[in-house]
Length: 368
Image (cartoon, rainbow, N blue to C red):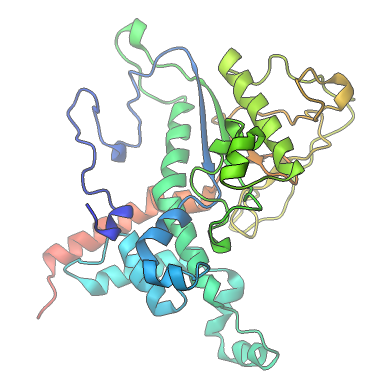
């Protein structure tokens, strides 16, 4: 129970009993036959879900006491050791196969600018001008993204996709037949400026809670812990409005601000990471589907909120659009297809690679 590796791999996972938990998640939630035919769902994630767990599992107390900003990993060797822990491959019988899986995963998360490191001609000339392509924070950044996607974001996205999947099987009893609920998805992307956690952790796990429940307006909280800026208080105002409206109505359409003129169009960013997918930006994040000057954004004069702040319309997460709301102090905007490329890797390709490695390991054990 005190093993720090337990932050990555839960020692006592849920038991599939056929009743309360009727099937495994590896079935891709295709049999949500007992989903209630009414009700709405809100799901969400923070931008850096795993940073909290990297701190506790990879940074020792002595190191943290000496330098609270110490990175969990600063070298490629430390990174690979951490990655094997994250992937639960550290004690496998075939380390050579597990190293292959780790390297394949690393390839998915490397920036293109980092990949030119293999080109000695280009690398030498970049180093001549003082650019090496990789820094100490590179390894922490990749490990955090991998941990967040594998352990938090992609399972959540997969569940949201299952909720809105029109091809889901139906229960034979009409009263228990599953329905597609109204679904809303968000990403909280702001790091509180006065947060005492190390800067590399960015938007940590659970940080949105204080915004949803209004801790920013509690003098007792601010006196005991830390304070907030005016933009952060405005963000909390907006988030409490969204959450309260959802709790009252189950949707974000009722009591929403009136739209602006019809000739104002939503803006789509066409930057792409490639492979024919216009929904992914170069950094792997989804494109911005609606800007703050879209018809869904209202001015102060036609808002009916307990505050005078403009509100961005929160689109539903549907099978076709996979729209979700990104919450930050700079602005709130709608995006499409959260972590699309990365979640295809974890939900589709990584299980296949793992199974193949297991098959090879069983049929061709490594000679001692």
